[in-house]
Length: 377
Image 1 (tube, rainbow, N blue to C red):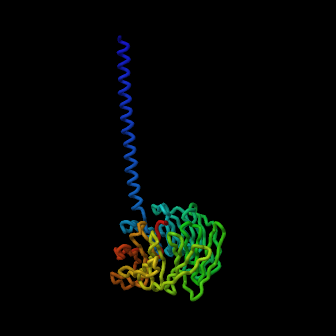
Image 2 (cartoon, rainbow, N blue to C red):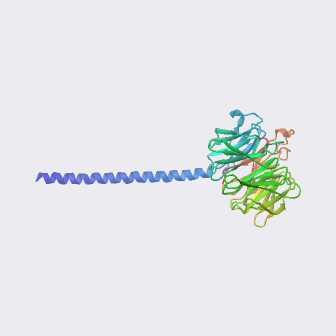
């Protein structure tokens, strides 16, 4: 009679053990799930806060890093601390879509630098007088143009492998003083424009297709291009004519000029709203910002106000709510302290609410704020 009792006791004990194991397993699983959920929320929040606007201070050999959400400078990257000269002349920036790395051209050092999210220099490429940058959205290609300030730059643009910053190729062009540079959203086509001639090169490097388009009339001096999110329209800003040019690029090999719009004196670097409904850019000589309705192809509004002093570069927050405009301020248009020596004036970044179209903040950065960039889309 004792053996069955022992057997029953052991059986009951095993059930309790099993219950404890199941309970422990459920608690551990729930803990892991909650931890992952919490980590996921933190990650999602950090993604919102991690968009940075990179501003070239061409006269200060530095880059200001602005938090796109708080509109505060979080760091100023002093290029002299990395061994570059006071005449490094940082000109243009762009960042990876996830913000993991960002790139800047140095006109004075013939370099394109690669920094990580923590603003640590990780690599560089050597290219003569590099200017504007454009990124391939799918491949690790970084397209590098030539500086406007260069009197006789190479008649080519560079292709750099972003992963190791090797210069893969310098593609010859058929015109002098290349400057304007952009790519289509699918990355298949790149467009390069001339400062000295009304000429645009369409090129598909992968397929080795290219074509040169020439426009009649007076030289526009193409400052830069931008392509709509749907990839069907490209616009160009003309420094001398003060015009915005519209091109149908449904056939990228043969851009077709479909319209011209007088916008202001010296329209500069354009940027599209995420939905492609609006185009924004600065009129450098007018100290103003143009807002163009892309459906009507008309100038809908001109924004003026404090801090707009030779507007140069344009960048948007991911949600399109805030427009960031860099300003050279070399002529002293913005001088709140009444400084006599305008050589000591700082450049600015003007933050504009795109919904109200009002200036919300003026951020003082370094001297001669030029190119401005953020996460590529």
